Length: 219
Image 1: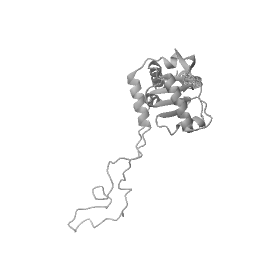
Image 2 (image 1 turned 90 degrees about the vertical axis):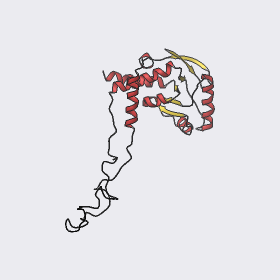
Image 3 (image 1 turned 135 degrees about the horizontal axis):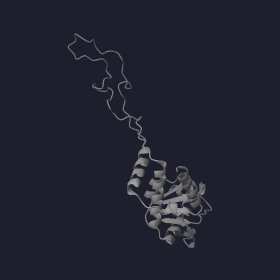
């Protein structure tokens, strides 16, 4: 499949052939949903934490003797049935939210999401973006020119770069609608969240080398 290649002035300067093994994969909604659920679960921090009876403050001394007081017997003021005592079955930060997915299935789900972007004309290839200074206003000017020329729609844009570019990162990080990511670090959640992917041309061979190599190693 061929797609047009734009320059940073929003003009078509050629075309490029996309690898069918990555960009023409039939979707499987169940696999896509499973991959998204697992990625979200693995990113979960588990910050909530309650103290059990061994962690709350308080002495270990028995409050009163076992018999003869007329009171209910009790062994510690840190008992869960006492006010300010430990919490039973409360949330713990030690809980492991990690879920596992077959690596081949994870890669295939990423290919499906990329294929969907191409099919819906939400995958734009740009030959390069060159900025003289890492300034947000300069990046916005170039970015809006590309959006107008390529007739992009939607608010959220995913900018895919072949390697770390400090100028692009620094000039785009203040923009809530733009997310910058390396071609070797693509993930299904960022791809699906983006309304449009703007991919630098040199990122395409990096995607092929990174993910087709992984797929081949799993066979």
